[in-house]
Length: 200
Image (cartoon, rainbow, N blue to C red):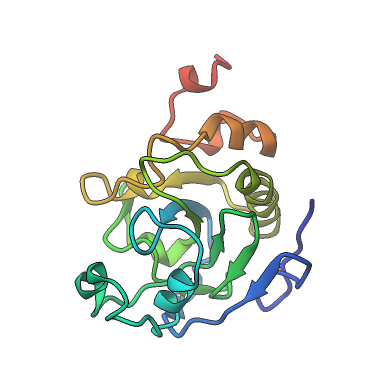
């Protein structure tokens, strides 16, 4: 499985991926290129999978009356560059050249406003349930493509850059597997100790 990003920052259309442009983005600051990949999880309603709710939310089309939880996010305007669904299919909402609104208040080793210099991948999932086997291969392939195309030099979870505020991708996410499938050195995962990977 391999992917390619075009000059406009969009994943080349292949079987199993869809472009779903979101209005929730803006330009990165001048001279700032992406250097960090942030992994998230999301489910709407919480703990429920499948359906169009996540895409509708990122595209400001969510039916607020469809579930009681949605009233809590009625005024929220967010997006991510990518969503990997439970079956491994991929939606792209924002060009990687643009700033998606996925990280919020955040800090990466003293560097604030992580949206400015990051790419966000949402996994359809939750903190309390294992991710589906079908999600890991496309995640590794997509992340590898982004690392190569943009020269990204670090990966982190949303909880790492917004501790105390966010908890995703959560304890069920297998960082070791992602590192192994991508073939990356532990240095790409700065918030995880070398002992976690068992390499030093």
